[in-house]
Length: 560
Image (cartoon, rainbow, N blue to C red; front, side, top):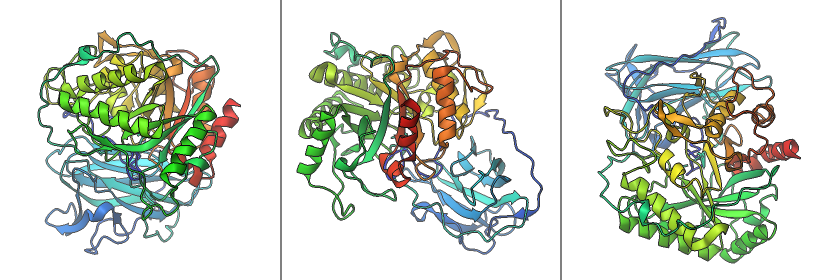
């Protein structure tokens, strides 16, 4: 999910719902710590007020009649467009282990810490369930923001008796939530995760109607070529600040304009509106913006239109919507002289109809129409057309365990739903950069669960793309490996940009393991060392600039 206002980088800790409705066995190793202090204020909400908790979009309230203990509890009114995240920032000590716990009641309720780990309850369970996670602060960390939230379209959740336990005397917690939570998206992440009630898509022609079969595949970069990909907040402003196209550092090889969004979810009509001067006082004119794009391209950079993000839900349920998509996207590409398209579909844009169980031969219209539309665009612009994708782990790697609603129904139909799109467009695909952030635990090829926030997660998730994997555990139905030149790793630029940030040292550890075969820790990549791994993607260029360009500087320091 790019968060800062539109991308699934739902900036502070948005994650995804678990695919199976039944119980999923997850194991979290909780580090021990001396119980010497309670670091949260009003964790039981017995003051009959939210403060010092802050909730997104005025979605939180304190209610009676739903308490786990005492009289009051937190009610988070999750909607189709807001997870109702409530957060509190506290003072903590460096290099110290803390345990966060809470009792929660509702569907897919999350508990976690910004930039660190999170956990969730996979189903309603009929009452309160206890969640608990532990985390260890960095050597320089003096504050932490903890959060709880529900999930899109799942209705109101309740939380009570939230506790942050750790050694030492608690300092006075701050009343603020994380600095400037992005309103946004893994790209991401990105991405209106608003789960609609999913009207059954109407039938339409599949990819066989595409005229692009003879278009040659995109040429891979030469050996040793590496790329840095970033999203530019072109249509909105948030805490990261607006950045003119001309001010984007030349270190960025692919610049994704965030975002193109639909007029309505099923229309297929995409618009790209630049940030208005009332929201972005420093915004340049259209002429200067277009000139700056051309200047970047003259230096060998690629500028793409990214469609989707947190708020841009797109469902091509009909052939008419498919054709509208092609026509409107073409118009935007032509107007600004862009190099291609980034697909950042999140939320409920892609899901599989019941019984659509073969990723190699999909039948669901929202899948087949998207494939057909992209192939038509590829045919129009030819080999120069750049195609990138930024799905979330839920839509890709989770497919190792779950695919669609499953053989008996009942699973989340979005599980693994990007796999048929990637497979069908694999010869046209320039780059896949899955959002390794705002994610729940994912099982890797070692059949162990991996949690975001460290090098291990990036290693395990990327290895799945480089090795291929059986879909839903069916060894007779394997999603084939992608070329290393088609794969980049998606990461948030800093802790404000998304949940799952890792410091440069961990980024380099992941790159060392994947490209050199060193420093892999407990996970051994099945694909072996891949020096031609294409590079890194981040949400976002703006957040990297806000953070002193730490992410991009480290990338170029690593690759030289």
